[in-house]
Length: 142
Image (spheres, rainbow, N blue to C red):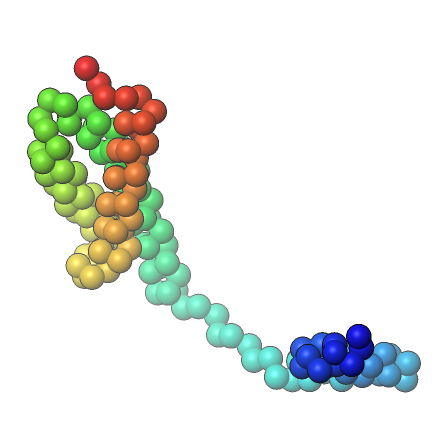
């Protein structure tokens, strides 16, 4: 059994580390594994203020798009029997454009690529999922 386990590289490495650590502790010195890992570890530079602001803007964008998508998902359920699905989809796309303008006013002017990646895909996904969820939960309004 031990022969089979020693043939597995991860197991043999683990056992070798245990032996080195046990040997180092018995000689009252720092284990070689820890000193090596500390020496090889590089400090990551602190994120700059602009990186933090970009992350904050991306989070705000996702929050705004998600909230508007849930609201539009419920509105789509209410409008679809009256106006039809094509007009409901048009409403959803118009509201995506409005949400994009709100995001741009909150976080400043961003590229279209940034807006698509930080919210539009999420908006479409959450909008359709919430529309289906409300349809299954409440049923088709009369």
